[in-house]
Length: 296
Length: 286
Figure 1 (cartoon, rainbow over the protein chains, first blue to last red):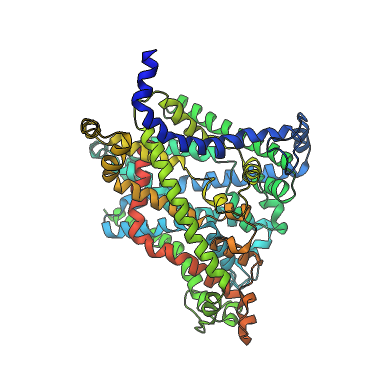
Figure 2 (spheres, rainbow over the protein chains, first blue to last red; figure 1 turned 30 degrees about the vertical axis):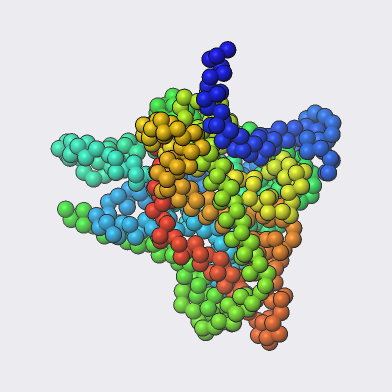
């Protein structure tokens, strides 16, 4: 009895500090998780947030049979994969290049500039893309063309991924640069004695040295694979580009919020969140087995 | 050694290209914002303004809705940041106490939300159900605690020497007193970093407001800008009777973007290192 009471008497002030944050998590994080039950229930706008009565897997079978869903599912996979394949390695390359710069002020200047896009609102980014790619924009002027890029489905993925590169590559170098400063000089000296040139030193000393950072960031990237840059797609796409641009989050936004099919939207959202969860757990498990690094 | 020289030259060229490509869109927007409409439509504006013209700046700055929305952004950012800092600090301090019973559970409650979230629709249904639509609370409450920031603060509190707080206990300070008078004064740097993280995120955010606010006078400036780009807001609507008003419509976008981004660009050089240190701190115990 005393063992359970004493910590409470000593720490009640600490627990009291946790009350408001816990309330936040309960209301704005865990209640919506439970709110996903409307994926299996009839939902009436203005009625209970948890729906009216059970309808089983009706909405799940509905979206599984919806060709529109499979179209956006494929789009999501393609955009997610392209983003991962291109945006994951580039910060490593940039960090390695920056690491070779011997003039400190120059290095710092390049770093400061390359971090800048990270601090912009996605609305500004989308606006800039619109201006650069408009018919009267710079890209058309340089290419001598008059292509309305943002109206062309075949250009959307290129635009999305290259703007993603612009936004994320600089900021992505921070952790790699930090990891690079911790590498042991002696390993490089040993490699030199063995006759290794710069390339082989990079391959055999530098890259293995930053491998834990690489694996951690890769797992995190895989975890957000399905989320795509929802807000950016929403700002950049239009009905003309839906065939390539529409992704699961934008699809369920239009179906759920705009058209009011809440249960249907929730079913798709739940499916997406579960895939995300499975992806991050599998990536973590695989990396723990194969390279011995993991998030938990 | 010759190959080293070549490498450094190539490296210099690549990094210069990175700088140019990064800065180019900014310069282009600024140039467009100062140019006349004809020059823009003719595709002649690159990074130097053509036909230098301030009409558009005057026009945008005379739009009452723009300033109302700009003020909303300030109010939302300040309010939301205060709420976020208070909640994050309290919870991070609790989580940093290793002896606390149930600490693992309290950490798990927070961390689990990083990997699984309720999703858009249930959140939307909930916030609407709570009657928060068209109130400031819909903007400032739903994302009050960022778990990454929480873990950064927790890691910092854990790094403080335990003797300090033991001494505080001897001096008769309770938990609240220790936090306010001993711990927080030592944590100014990390609190400042957190304030910046939250403030920039709120300043830049638009979707929460877009989702939950229907009335134009409640919008933050990001939604104003979004509507402008999507063609749903018309800065000319508030109408100065100027004759060349109709002509300026296209570079209004550029001007509004410049005016929205100026505060960020102004403080950026001074605060950048805090962000970097914040990211590092988070990485140590991520």
